[in-house]
Image 1 (cartoon, one colour):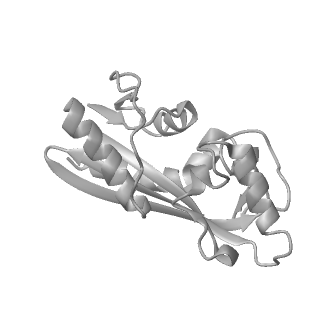
Image 2 (cartoon, rainbow, N blue to C red):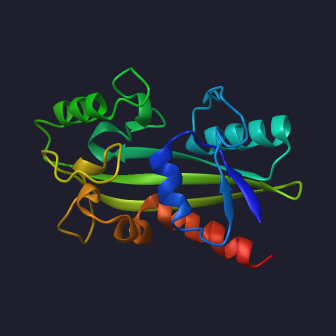
Length: 190
């Protein structure tokens, strides 16, 4: 089966491809989609739907797209849907982490969760899958694996940040990994 994963993010593609070994996963680059798909919704679900619909309608492929947010309790769920552009510039992980750490400096409540929503367009039907990973925001960066907020997020029940875990370890417990597992179970049931 050939499915497009609506992303240009090589790290995200690598992470998800490791979880879907029996599916030929194509990126936006692979199908010649060079434009940045606008993420104009106010929810993670809405952005995932926008991206999946864009690829299916414009390129005609079965497609899944995700949107992920880091929801910090002490910040009323921020950065949330704006996680990738929290510090202004889209995708600047260092600035995003710096701003988040600064905003939590004097706060003892560091609980947070990552949430991923996946929208799959397949056979003229749309399906949604959600994954949530609870944890806390560390006071400083730990590890150099992963991407995004991984160096400052420690999942509940673990002593290490996402950035200190192997791709395999992270994939089994992460928000994206859990959502992808639901996607895999669905695809296997077809």
